[in-house]
Length: 410
Ligand SMILES: *[C@@H]1O[C@H](CO)[C@@H](O)[C@H](O)[C@H]1NC(C)=O
Ligand SMILES: *[C@@H]1O[C@H](CO)[C@@H](O)[C@H](O)[C@H]1NC(C)=O
Ligand SMILES: *[C@@H]1O[C@H](CO)[C@@H](O)[C@H](O)[C@H]1NC(C)=O
Ligand SMILES: *[C@@H]1O[C@H](CO)[C@@H](O)[C@H](O)[C@H]1NC(C)=O
Ligand SMILES: *[C@@H]1O[C@H](CO)[C@@H](O)[C@H](O)[C@H]1NC(C)=O
Ligand SMILES: *[C@@H]1O[C@H](CO)[C@@H](O)[C@H](O)[C@H]1NC(C)=O
Image (cartoon, rainbow, N blue to C red; front, top):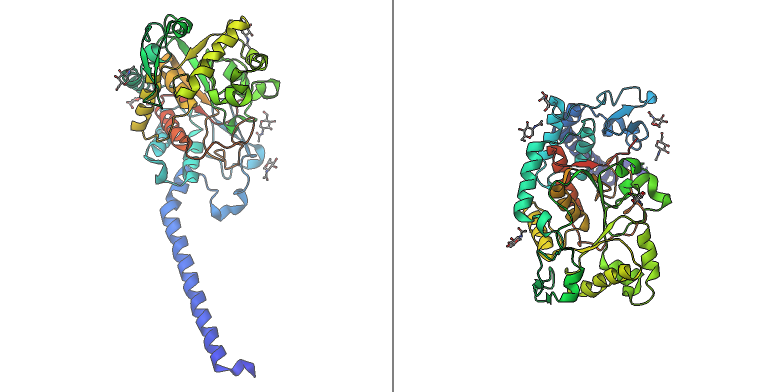
């Protein structure tokens, strides 16, 4: 009988041994995981780990994120897994101090898995955010030392006198001498001053805004910043609102979508009509390619007798902001316009609220989101440092310097 074959028997024994070793190794790894992570799971009271796999795939449907970030358990949740979520806790309650510390303990992004950071962020949502004036003021005074938006945010006749030789932010060998024609289009003085606005909203264009229904809340802010001429048509208004006080325009949009304004200008003008009360903010002196097309924007508005203001970022402001964030660990070829606006808002506003800033492919519940709220076009890899920007914002939220909104409103 083939069964009696001694060699085959030895083989069988061999694979049995292998199998046994495999089982032992698996058990050991499982045990280690239990020891390393188990305590944390229990501490947080969020027991949807791999042991209760049935909850893993879908648990966003179970509860609602409300306006103040609290989480209500649905009737069918049974309170089994989420008894911990009982309502908005005080930001400086013992529990919330602990949860905030859990986030601040993550010193660098690579220290923990993304999912672990999501967990900690999600847990923090039971805490009612509160501005910490001490922390906010110390951050703001650091910004006023490095960057000083109320004096240098945009080029003015005061900070950029006639004849100034402006050095570009990127093409540092390039120099632009301010002639009288350009000088005339600068505002006399900075249009904004320190802590001018009480509550500001800075809108990133992240897919996290989709279905957020945050439009009303955003429109209720005293001052709203938006990036890169995002669509704010009827289709999106419920999620992103309409109010816009400052909108940045990346000159590459004008180059790609509007032929550098060398041909018909009306299509561009018509797009701007949607932002009727907004001032336009352009990086004209970022690199030499941007200058002509940025200045042409002003000519177009004048030709159409528009009342909209056009401002140009002061290149020194952009350089100093990049430097500042480099010391905070944000490494990118270029800081995003979102980060620049947040930085400016911190000096110009008492309270800064961020919407649509979430640089991860998933929302905090692990559901995949689109890249923008209006499309899914990915940026050039390595250009911005999104996760590290968001990571900083999450820290600042935990300290009470600004508030990051990632849930839905109402
Ligand atoms: C998650 O649950 C919600 C509500 O219970 C449901 O509408 C949705 O289809 C579920 N999603 C998945 C991926 O199962
Ligand atoms: C979530 O909120 C919506 C609208 O307020 C409500 O219809 C729904 O029942 C809520 N779901 C849970 C699970 O509480
Ligand atoms: C939290 O802050 C408020 C107001 O600053 C204060 O009245 C309260 O005692 C603080 N609570 C704790 C637990 O520190
Ligand atoms: C604000 O932050 C400071 C410094 O971290 C802390 O000592 C203080 O208790 C905080 N205040 C509130 C009201 O949380
Ligand atoms: C920006 O940095 C430069 C060089 O470090 C410095 O001379 C300048 O004063 C800074 N600008 C502001 C507004 O502080
Ligand atoms: C622009 O401002 C006017 C007057 O304050 C206001 O009535 C109008 O609704 C604003 N438009 C937009 C798009 O916010």
